[in-house]
Length: 329
Length: 296
Image (cartoon, rainbow over all chains, first blue to last red; front, side):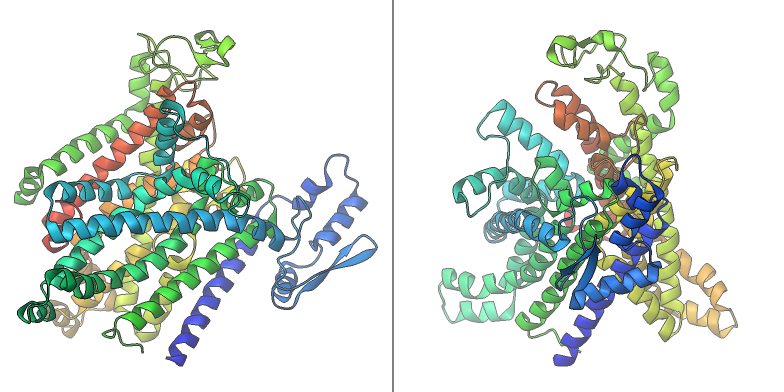
């Protein structure tokens, strides 16, 4: 078990390392110099050299990457005019654009993306498991069709299309909801949920159908198992059979899918955030990319990569922990 | 031909195939169609806009008229029929070329991993896992934003999508190759002295056609979604080249004043994606009946 965990961690670190190298390399291949942007109009060669030094761009790419890694693990010092400012670990550097620490920018934005992802996941699970149980236990033809239609929609419709449609319906035509505007959970929980309702729904439309299908298949499969027949033969009430036998069997695959999907939402949150104007990590990326704000882009990419990798590893471990048939090698 | 007949016996597949076919025709004959309408996608028509209301098209339903069959774009007055038709070109063109590249890379890597020795397999499989673990949308945004603006965007989009999303194809190809490898006819070819190259080409590739094409049918709409998403975010094709995703993005600022402008690119994108999904599902049902559970 320990060996397995260690190997997973090593693999995850490898993915993150590859990711950071790729993003770093990309920006060195880019034909644009971020220092020129920062320096602005009327930039003298001396001033440009200063900006280069302050940004750490006067070193070789490999040396810069080395410093970046060092900052991540142990923190590093940046020259700032005559002084030196210390950036504690995990240091992702300072934004070229706003000069704020990237870790702070990310920490400011992460609650928004997390609210979006976790809320959407809970809503998707609630709808998906509910619909899946209903159609698995009772065989409503109508519900089957709704679930099938949703599955198709989930595959065939981009989230921003659903988002646009929801906005048009609920904010413009019916005017049931105001246009979403992010309110932190700590400020006003009710306003927080109200403003995130449409983004959550948009994501749930896409995701819940998959859960419904999985639950339906799981319930039908477990109800046909021998141990359920045994329980029936012993005269256990049907309600208890469903609750203690069928449900558990059906929900195992959902656990792993949930972890993976949470990461997937975070990785593609940029679309939902742009659609609904939520100031999350994804929006930070879009803004940074247009300004060639290298530290921010690297930070966002690494953070999303980190979340995806961790979620995948957790999914694998959970799967092994829940289902005794899975052998860890 | 029984395969085709079985496919078209499925009403969902037939509907999807017809719509997808029409979309492909529209994309191919886009210049002809716009010429027929007497319009082009880039001419501004300021006289058709209501400047008092911020540039919304004059007339009902986004300014539909005999000249402008689907109305004009708010803010610029460009002909929407022409833009939508050319947008089909971008959407399908990018998705199809990306698919071709994905198949090339994915099948190449997959077959090499399946037929190669233990170390080649391990290395290629790890590489595949690596690309599957990347947050590809985030990377695509970063990549597309830094390449020079004057590079041909549609081609670039196709290359970026393909480079970031070939992992699934490779994984499926590897699995199929591993199972094909144990077949008697492959062993027979190897025993009679066929080299690995010949085995791959003559014995393995034909057997891969069905499973890989079934998977590819699903990848195509997913590529369209990616293209639309990247253009929606403003890192896809550049104006004045029209694309559905880009139109949807500008529609977000107009949809209160001119809902027609949302429904046109949105509806077309939805219809096309749905059509290709139905096709993919139909193909899968015929080729692999066990997995036809997605839709019934």
